[in-house]
Length: 356
Image (spheres, rainbow, N blue to C red):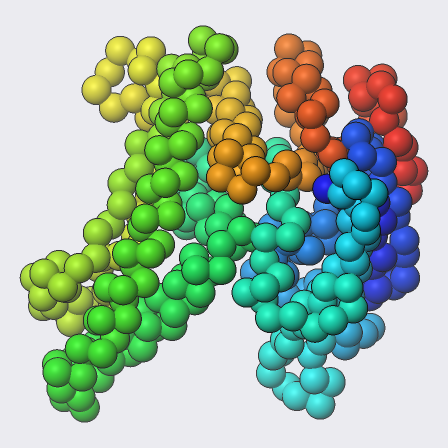
């Protein structure tokens, strides 16, 4: 299945714009600031109703509007078409930026549970380097991004976990001030334990897949890589043992919200093989590229469906050798590239050009 057409209404900088795509290479060309990345964001948004750029959905709505829609036509191998759409809106009379969403398939409103999984995307960005050098939060967001567009169970568990964590932390503060009893923690503890297990299992399945992909890769620079996953296990015993520390600090010390991982390279002759400390800029770029390739492999093997690849100005960060590697990989997928450099069209022969 590929993306044939997309209609943006009041989405970011676009008020009413249609873009059409070919099943293979598509190159969006234009100067910086003209809205190239907004198109990629809209395609990604179609997968789950979330953005890869902002956690605030209100920012997706054009500044002079209270409603936004992204509608698309998908075409399968039998040339049958499916129309999907996500609408978001905010109440113009409310001072609180509460956003409501509607998911539609063939113009019929569906639950998010039934909608998720129809379209899958993998995004390549220059900022991916921060998966190595950035904060643990960024790495956790990456793991959440993978399953938020494919697995309702994960998305639901993550939402319930975060809500329970917020309530538990608030309750810890109340207990410290003698306004609540420690017994009041029981319910929220059980919610955390149940949902943390679901989150943990999905994350472990992905990390195992990535490490298998790395170790069996034909490229010697990729085959020496691995993800060193450091989960923060949450269970009844851990919560009990950490209770006094949690109480004194006012927040829960263990759980998926404290998970982290690093990129390790076995060629480093030190005990800590973290690329963040010892890797060159080129090695780090290759590692995040390899992670995205592993993500593609995971989605294909798990769901037997090809994702749409979204590459945001990626060539500016890669040398010629790795540019050619990217082009070779992308030939098997529908891919949407963005660039401000017209010369990039020479790298992507036979691509459809969308000039902004």
